Image (cartoon, rainbow, N blue to C red; front, side):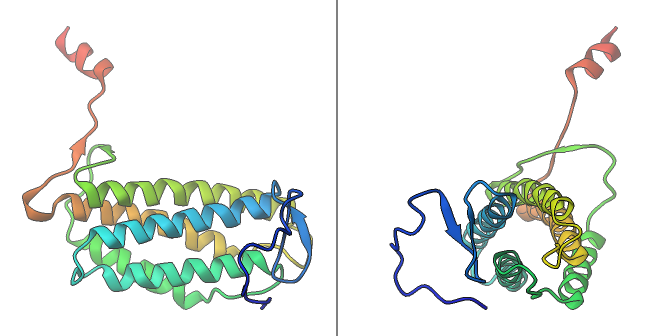
Length: 194
């Protein structure tokens, strides 16, 4: 792994480049740096969600682990060729997703992002996660033939993570007697009225 920062304001990025963990320098507009930024943004939203939940909430431990996993993913992206994710991370996430989903009624309609503050933060994490996933796929396509290619596990993890946040949002929207907001199209409603 690369050097840890002991000095934050290095001024080395003043010309539009940044350093990767392997010592190489690339443009701040590169797909790789874009993905790193989106994973960082996702991790920040997970932190906001965790801060919104009560300290003793049953989901705190999994959110904490997700933040560590996202940092590992950032490490993979920052040091091309480095592997930090393990299949067990994906399995743990899938098991948690299934456990939360078992207590939810079947979804028969689309739901709107919202419900309460915590559920809304989940939807923000979900949508930022999907954006990060799309950018990660773009990076995988750009670098598919090199030694620094994106692992399928990284894409799978982000894909499953967005699913997790959708299910968790449904769970949190129902806390304390709350409910999800179902989508109702004006177009569909006006046809029914005719």
